[in-house]
Image (cartoon, rainbow, N blue to C red; front, side):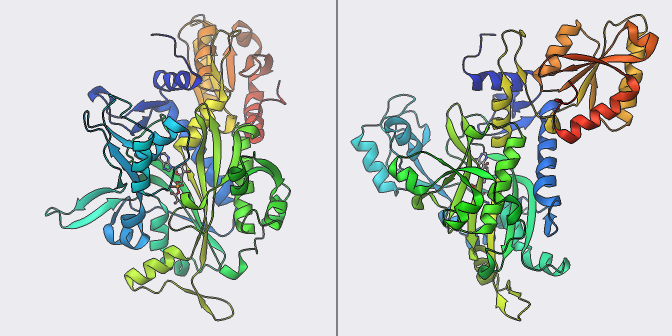
Length: 504
Ligand code: GAP
């Protein structure tokens, strides 16, 4: 296999080779924008989502989780505005028929930022800049808008028009009244959902960055519009320093600023305390997942990029080799969705406040994708290590696929039997461990380093005499000798602290 060139290409190669991510339907040539998780990747993804749930949902008293359907009738998307507004500009090569997102093509060829411009203006720029098909040099068609909803029909006669949901948020708005009543909820309260979303992207690209099927973890926080600054948790996070890239700084060609969330809300740079609360938590969460702070920033969306439902957006962006990419969208959705669903369905979606007033709550929405953060974590945790002789993943223990590998030094003389005993004991105690006796011990260290396993336990001849084993640290390759009986305690400390530092 030829040596992969860029760091991203090395990460992609690792993903395929080590059971992390595979292209979907690969044996039939694949299908653009669809990827599947392998046995190692699925463990990392599951832990990532579980950690999100713990940090953003379960730590709160008033956020409920639901699981909705992936297919919804088109009436929903008429009301939500997706049928009309959820569009991207499309241009097609007249010779080879390849299709492109016109704004991306212009940005790549000229460096001009053109997102949000109408199709006529994009066509004009294509012509003025003499941009042709990047694949064959052919002439490009006029730009037209293309709707990203993935459409289907439901029922044997194909009677009901429906679409795959483009965001998990819509089920939350549709179920708002039921959740409000069944949970006897009081404002402010949130509803969370984890699940698949689908978008018929014109040109899927950059591996997991632009997909047609992806996972989202979303929270819709319902608040009294007059109380968007009454957020109990805000005091706890107001001193968290974040990197903020305001619309003004973008217009002036300036850089991001380091600012405490409390100060940013006070100065009106962030629209309200609820938004500030989630942004601070997001920043802390990504730091805990191994993303360096210089690679993180909140970019305020420019008016022309802001989605149709939003009164203000801050994207949490993470830096990749190909630039900063949005990984979480924070939107102030106001009462847009509940109001529209109320109008279109005829259902009352207002709530009664303790003062007896009827109001439609406003919504603050932190919307996480899973695949982009997943790729960002792999990218930033990927260590190119010439000295060690192999590249490895410095994954934080809380999302590593296994906490430890368990290895007999050699596969003879009773060592495999003893190693299996240790492996079984750890597994039965609830730890994710993996057993391996194939190949040299160096190769086995390399195999688990590559997929980010933080610890390796080796059972050797001394183990048979005194019930001690060696524990190796992935990050430093240091080893300590401990009693088998101490292992559970060591593992628990690593899990609790999300680090191996105080063991080695
Ligand atoms: N409910 C709001 C919403 O869906 P969004 O900014 O369109 O907002 C939120 O999406 C997140 O979902 C993004 O920050 C990104 O992580 C993920 N996402 C959106 N489109 C994606 C795509 N085509 N491929 C992969 N992830 C995507």
